[in-house]
Amino acid sequence: MSVMAGRSQRRAGLGAMLALLLGMGCISPRVAMKRDVEPVQTEVGAFYLEYPPTDLQGAAMVRASIEKAAPRLAKWGRLQQPVTVRIHPDHGSLEAAAPGTGYGWLRGWTRYDVLDVQTPASWSPLPASQRDLDETMLHELTHAVMFQAAADFGGWRQKEIPLWFREGMASYTAEQGYRLPTLEQLARTLDEHPSWDPLMQPEPLYRDQSTVVYGAAHHAFTFLVNRYGEHTVLALLREMSRGPDFPSAFTLTVGIPPDTFLRDFARYLRLRGFRGGRLLHGPGEPPEAPLLENPDSASP
Image 1 (tube, rainbow, N blue to C red):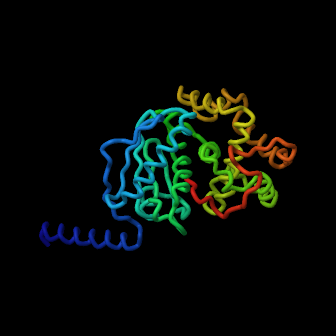
Image 2 (image 1 turned 180 degrees about the vertical axis):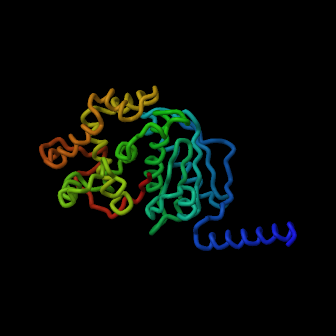
């Protein structure tokens, strides 16, 4: 066999394998993206949009959501670097950009300077309204502002920011408590499942009990704000930006270790402390809300 023939056969074999993987959904084809030359400039920083050239409506909706979110994000700080917002045409392409997730309810995935979001027209079971998208984008962009307030690009992953704080801060900012279990519903669920620990050990619950995880995160963060104030959250982010990781910065700014705080919240929940008048509802959250199977717009 000649060298050239061997190479041709290897290329043919590779092509067949790629075709097979594409057919099985193991590899998603790359979607051609258009990148806006001019960023969306806001009071918290700049955002670049990337989207399929045919999805002008989705891009316009996302742009409007960014502009609307900026004033509410500003209380947590400003971006150090522009954020690229990539709009994906369907759920499969979103999951291809967020490897290892596999969550059917996922609508967005945020890192330090990149937000991948599913175009609102392809949300299921119904296309997203502008209000739905506004809420999701505010949630997702809170992650970016938090990451950039806490660290530089090289160090944000090393801060060990726990899921309850990341997701609680995002849902609190986006006022998503109405989508989640109330304190009473959460307390009853944990009474029925005493082995569940959605705050300190959320990973085993995340895929199938995401509502419990997000609900616990939302209420724990709200408990933090009600007890210590939003200024303490800002001080915690500033402390992390100086070098300490989350556990150390939390202990320095709040005055107790995060595990102690979470045990305090768990006791408050278990003993129904909220029935005594110290309600922990976030801004605009009604006292009761239906227990949903999964939050419509949650993101890791």
